[in-house]
Length: 358
Image (cartoon, rainbow, N blue to C red; front, side):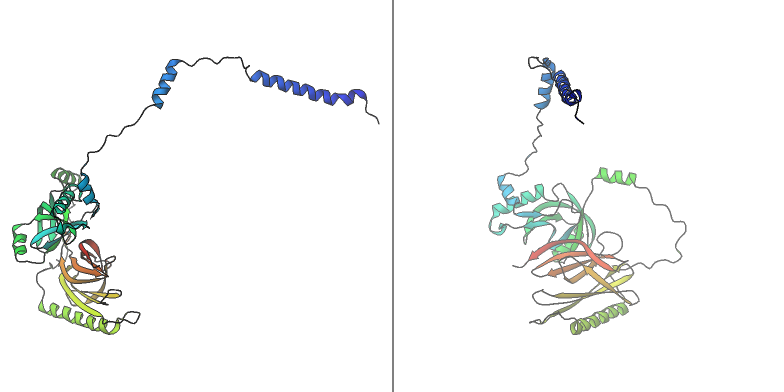
């Protein structure tokens, strides 16, 4: 059926009308080009400019080292400033505290040695410390720092020892201990004021604990400790071998130390190693007052074998720590290990006076 003329042209006319309406609405929204924008007040511009042009300037910090001292400081590796415990040892009849490593030829250059001393005093881990509390094999004391020096490649602080320690130093006694910073008087008083007093016990203990005497050991117990050492020595020499064919003879060593190791009175330590330290093994046995042995273990990071054992209370808790001469491949150090009686494990408590073989 043919389409009528009015219907044929109705749709195109409707589309044209809609397009015209759209153009009219868009023209109503967009302002004409000749319209001038209203001016922005000068006060608004000045505030924006002042906010954008502001520059933050930091106050420069005072310089602690000059150029020569900074060059020397680049050759020193100090202990971290957060270090709480430092190893103290007798060296050349002086009481020294290890604070870092020195990789500079100070032996042949007196001027460089003086610079290293100044750098250690100004930026070392004990730069703001005047006194140290020392617990060692000879007892407990508070010593003052009287200077700094370099000993065997280590940056050290020199202490003024007590009369007892000074007498032992003159006799070349092998003293070793652990030093901690002495808190200021104000901080100590505040800590004591904020710390609540311990509550009194409700009832006395039923049985009194026998005090541990560090300086003496019954002859029967000493003989038992020696027997345990010899037995472990024979077992290690016969049974503990490296997993590969070793070209040289193994070095087997046994050491003992008496002390107050919680419920135990002595430690037996036997080690086996190759001459080059590419393989090592260690066995530790704790011996009680009744002579009963208990296996133990030493964990000292890279240091694998230990000898020259000495027991002393380094933290004042009544349980002795173990001071050792710890060794590894091409290196060694003075290491102090702390015992956890629950797990029977010794872990590193402090370490210092390290050396390397190159």
